[in-house]
Image (cartoon, rainbow, N blue to C red; front, side):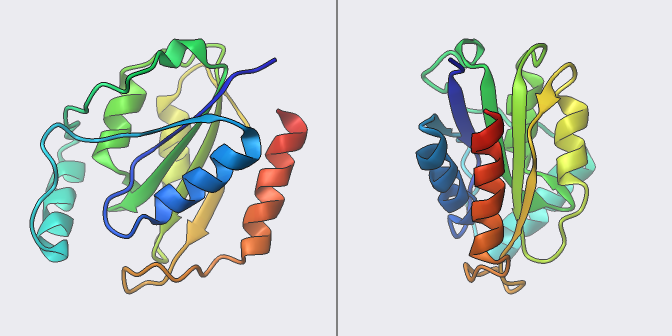
Amino acid sequence: MSKTLVVYYSWSNGNTEGIAKMLRHALDADIVRLETVQPYIGTYDEVVAQAQREVQRGFQPKIKPLGLDVDAYDIIAVGTPTWWYTMAPAVSTFLSQHNWQKKTVIPFMTNGGWPGHVIADIKKTCKGASFLPSMEIQFDSAGGSHLQTPESAIQTWIASIQKRK
């Protein structure tokens, strides 16, 4: 039987966290939230500006220990908000720290209407992995937590993963 882990990063509204928890429950998985050693502080606009600088230079912040052995899992769902058209830098750090050979990855991301190339970037970083269906989940473009993607589409995605797991 495959052992499943949901790993996610969430910063402002908890949108990615909410999706991660739905997936954890549906897949009877373990779950862990990525946290940076240096937390992002400041106003929303200040953090957005910092994020842009970090993404542009490929910065990978140090993340806190996860408290579990990622190598013990066969299937790993990876969730991230979209930061300047790609994954949050903390997710990039996490992905670059692990060997993805013989792992199955479930990429998912949240966005405010600009999904960018997050899923492609996750897949490119997880060299040697196989992939289950990915999902782009849109929330309102004002930075809020109003779900734009129909919840039925999210449930269909989760059901498709349950069948293949």
